[in-house]
Image 1 (tube, rainbow, N blue to C red):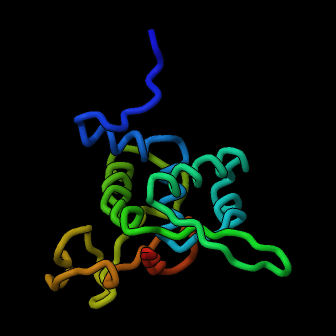
Image 2: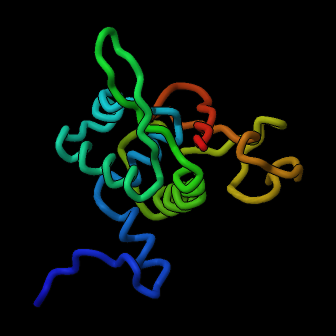
Length: 163
């Protein structure tokens, strides 16, 4: 029996999406990038991921167009940060759907509570969509923040995509 190596190019859009997103760590890297993490050492520290695995996942996310790699100077050394592209930013509803499913069907010993989506305009909790569940006003990406204490205390503005 041959091992599946890719679903890229298959007719099923779920299989193609899984080919990009379903590797271990990939969704957590996207979650943290959405919350504003951009640097390798920050991803590593926040996730506790091995360097070789993080390097591989970041490279695949760049190759697949979900992240872009931008140089920055750190002292006399050039390093890179990883920023969301539009494709990476558009994965936000997937992250929210997985978070909602996880809250409903899995348990945690952590008392931090679920990740919440907050409408900046009214301060109310909402779900991904075109209008706020709390006040009914139209929603744009810039109108939302996350409240998730496991990443950082307080509300977390969503990172803007580049390009």
